[in-house]
Length: 135
Image (cartoon, rainbow, N blue to C red; front, side, top):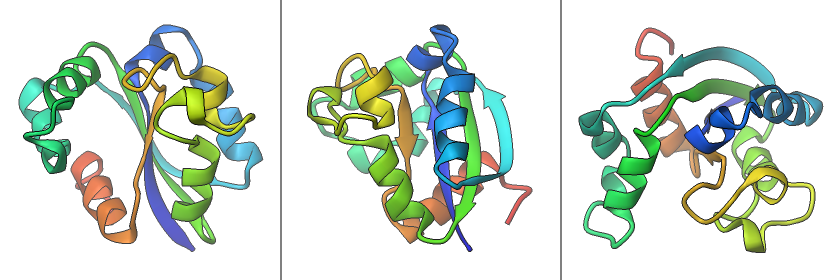
């Protein structure tokens, strides 16, 4: 079984979409291994998104992800990373595949409702970021 990190971003939490997003995840065969609701401080968000530091969208992304609660979870499934990235859809909801989470719930390229790890290394690091007591 492969593990990956997924989180529901503040826009979806504020619009009471947690249950609908989790339903899509579970209906796609993922098992939730761990889950928590948190609010990131600016320093935490900057650390989490450090690979984007220096890019024009970095500050906006950090500010946005700190603006409200997020729901972080560790998901398990064979080919979890690839399958979750497909389920999540393109970063910009305008280009996301119909039926994907971002197509269904995303508002724009920043407020796109969710985050999913993009590689096994990233998944391991991101899981430890949110769940240092686990794996």
